Length: 361
Image (spheres, rainbow, N blue to C red):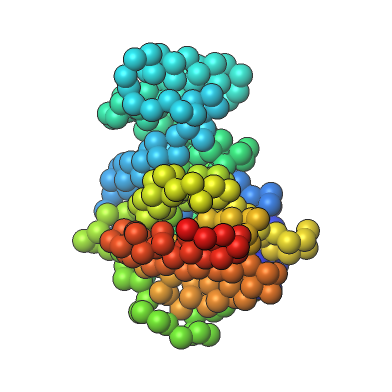
């Protein structure tokens, strides 16, 4: 696959703390942020329905960022690995870890401690929106080992002048309160003219219409794998998508979670690694692999509904060819098969691995 680098503005040069619009193909940009590009902040993607008020959109963004932060625990809290559930001394332990982390960095201790406790016990945050916005942005950045975070806001088609003003106003609040980059993609703004447009080209990702669509473009609002969904509509809730953390099944992917549970009981499945970045040489553009057995050179990909879109379908084919030329076998399974017929999936993966190892049984 050819490069996904950016011509013009580098990811590290995009602004933090203000709102800009990225002038580039929205689907290509979405493909380019997973895995996170070198030098980029942690990037989460927010799909919004038509906003009716600033307070409503801000509440929706905070709710979705909060879900992401809780799902990513303990990636943002070193030392909390293996602590699950609120029983015993778990709540005091994660609270102490959070306060210790906050004392050594930029985090607000009480917020981080509350978030850590809620990751185990559930519940709603008692902090005001401004504190939550700043705290969640820092947590998401830490989850991916980045110093800063940015929110990629997918603008839906057909917004009126009032809705555009609400959207931009909310994004400005997010950028200011969260000290985050807020980058708009998708439909252009027609009524609001105060947002700078920054040219952004992502070469190497197939454009829509360049490949056959095997199953129809993903319907708006239909949940896909790895915590990503299509653009929200009035009848579907907004959602946030984010990349995987290396070494773990994606917390937003029920099929990855289910497959890991099944593989954990199979001795032959040892040596697996989730969500690894593959870069055969320094000039190659990295790609992320759902599941890898490096010794056997076996890659397993789990395809959600978003893989049926033309751009993603074409990109998948390019990835497969690149991996096959480098000696890897690529096994692809629809996420629905993993969730409804996991024994067949396990059997086929096991059969392939045993064949590569030259073993039986």
